[in-house]
Each structure stands twice: as C-alpha cells, then as structure tokens.
Image 1 (cartoon, helix red, strand yellow):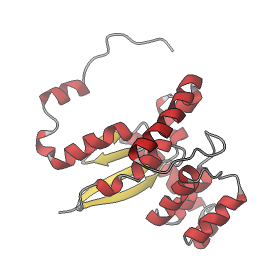
Image 2: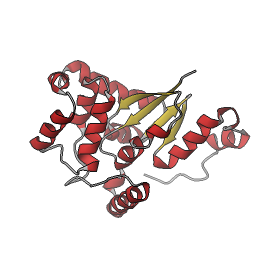
Image 3: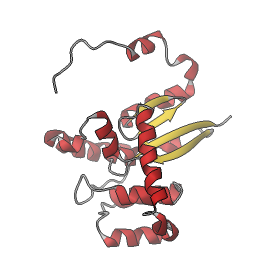
Image 4: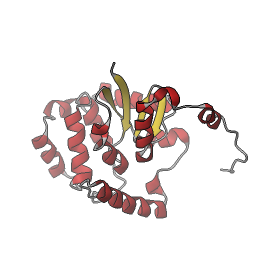
Length: 211
C-alpha cells in the first residue's frame, strides 16, 4: 500500500534544497505530493520572522548550510543575495503541475549553481534544462496565483509553520532536523507517538513573553 506524503517547500529555503536531495531515501512505497507554499505567508500567519531577518542567525545559517552540504556531499552555492523573491519560481512550479523535474531544476539553479532569479540568464538556463514554455504562459494566471495562495493557507491550517515540512498521516516533520524523525515514523508508525509524545503536545506554557 502506498504511503502518501505531502512535501511543503519554498525555494527561498536552503534547507528545502538540501532536503529535496534526500527525498530519494524515503521508502519505495512513498508517494510524494509536492506543495509549493509562500514561506513569507506562513511567517505572517504565525507572527514569526525568518532566520534571515535576524542578523546573527542569518550569518550562522548560511555558514551552517555550507558546512552541512559539505558533510552531506551535496553541491551547494549561495545565490548572489538572500533572501530573494521566490514568487515567480513558486508560480512556475504550480503552472507546471508541480513537475518534479522543474522543481529540481529550479532548486539546482539557485542553490547548486548560485544563480539569481532576478537574472534573465537563469530563466534561459532553466528553459534549456526542462520544458517550461507552457508553464511560463500560465504562471501569471489568476488560477495559478489562487492555487499558490490556497497551498499556503492549507499548510497553515495543517499547523505547518516552516519549510521544508513533510506531512505524513496528519503529522508534521519540520526541517532537515525532522527528516530522520520522519524516517523512523515511516518505519514504525504504530509505536511512534507514545503517551509521552501525546503529553508534550499539550504541555502548558509556564510563562509568555510580552510582544
């Protein structure tokens, strides 16, 4: 029996790039549904800020990703500037019916080769790697824009707060840190969420910081 997995992602995340290189490790019976979302929309929904918006965290995150990619033996090069506007790439993905090859090519352009989405040469390179002509014609359509908005709103309604997130059987596994956890869950789902896991979900807050 196939196991359906929803993968929420935004090209703006280097961790999403790194995780997509590891998705092949998922069991063969896993069927991945690729769901592009606007990370900024999730941040707004939860009243949060991204790691790139906190200067020392931004610096550490870039260095950490460079180190992690080396440890994973994954080619990695930061684009000329970050954060960047990923909206066009997300809409192109939706317009291509979330085509896996298109998704991988966009990730490679940004994070493997360090290209900029603001550069026409990047889009020219993409068009040579995968067929995107028809998708380009549709990416600014109201239907595509609405689908991306729906994806983001749906993710938030499922308690998704960041990218990348793997959603399996109504459980969310966030970030690169959550990938091994997701793999363990797939291997033994019946015994994964025990009483202590359930208790942690409803653990009361001892104090709330004023905002």
